Length: 230
Image (tube, rainbow, N blue to C red; front, side):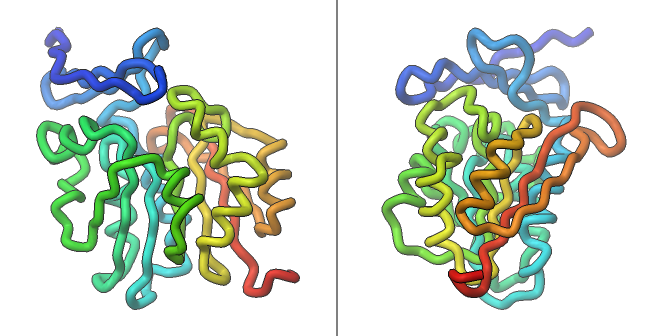
């Protein structure tokens, strides 16, 4: 068997641990120090693609749509988002860890067909939570592929995203009928309740890590109503 080769390491802010990028043949893996198993693998990305497809389904033909992707990872969510929107769309991807961006420009690029090279892509280095809390940009869709979902694993500051306050702030950055789509490692009934309290129309989808097999992941779809009173 071909051995794994370490390509790089990155520190997660606020003592979140260390990420390690490794390669074995054409396969790539990202692991977190102190956690058993992988965070990401270049062969397992079906649920990330479905996140983008579901999140952008209502705007695929909309001119000048603006989508925010929270979390670059191995680039699969971003790549699927670019495939799901029109040529006139803009896709902003927020990534906390600079090394992850560099890995996607380098060894990881071919995995997801180099989405950072697409002229529609804009990269923002920083915490997507701060971006959503402090700016006045309006989005047609927000796709959060951050951490482990509502149950944070690598970065405790992500908890704000899934709090009642965070969800209400996210709603303010969405245009009427805009879609919030959230990837989660598992189901979370309390989080679905928080989404509804934030006046989103909620649907929950269970998807497989690989087409027809692998771990079951959860996609939360939360649509902002046309009017605040709805």
